[in-house]
Length: 299
Ligand SMILES: Nc1nc2c(ncn2[C@@H]2O[C@H](COP(=O)(O)OP(=O)(O)O)[C@@H](O)[C@H]2O)c(=O)[nH]1
Ligand SMILES: [Mg+2]
Image (cartoon, rainbow, N blue to C red; front, side, top):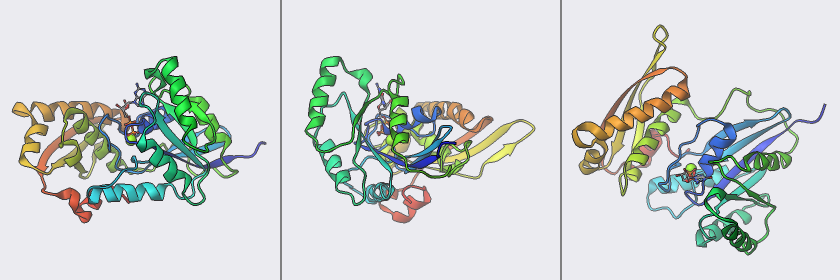
């Protein structure tokens, strides 16, 4: 029998590079939330990828950035922690955005980490560019510094995703299967549910509202006879005006959020879902470390 391999592979890159979308493509199910709002990911999420003779634990990190508040600091702290002792460091760079200062900053950051493996570059969203743009981007990548190899992927079309997975698996040391094969992530169900709801708020609002949103999920109630999970959740924002935006005219906004969240939650839980959503104002919750932990962000 050939030896089993396992280990950790961190996905890093600027906000919006496509890290969480890649995680979902690798797992073949939605486990990470995605949106075009930078800083969508607040949690360090681990997603488990299995083959017959290997297990890769992908660590989806929030993008690295300069923190502006306690939430930002907590998010960065959890990203730094996620990079300790990884076996593979995959740095995603958006093919449709010329390599910029942000990419360089992250490249330098990860290549200066103690014990960090040479980064594997992942050119993401290649479905958005033509051959010329792709070539220019490759030339820019060459100027970044010393890296391992370049994988081209589109997490949306699936192009290159299994090649990337193979490249990761090939770099894993010998080790056991840490997680049973039916486990997809390390996130508690309540956290996943809160995140799925927050994603819908992010996707339906703009300006300051997405960043001011936190979601808290109460106890879950499963009725076996009706195969129905009842979920009571509260969406917190920081101002009355933000609450007005989330709730929308005559409640239309919150209704739409509820409808699309429910569809995803039924997929996630594999049961029918009753979803009760409230919106509350909690001033300055992002500046309060205790509140941030209550919402489950960071460690
Ligand atoms: N066209 C295209 N869009 C993508 C691809 N991967 C991600 N996106 C989009 O880019 C945005 C950011 O993706 P996300 O995974 O949340 O980025 P993250 O911040 O790095 O986790 C979302 O709107 C995604 O739908 C891709 O391969 N092709
Ligand atoms: Mg993300």
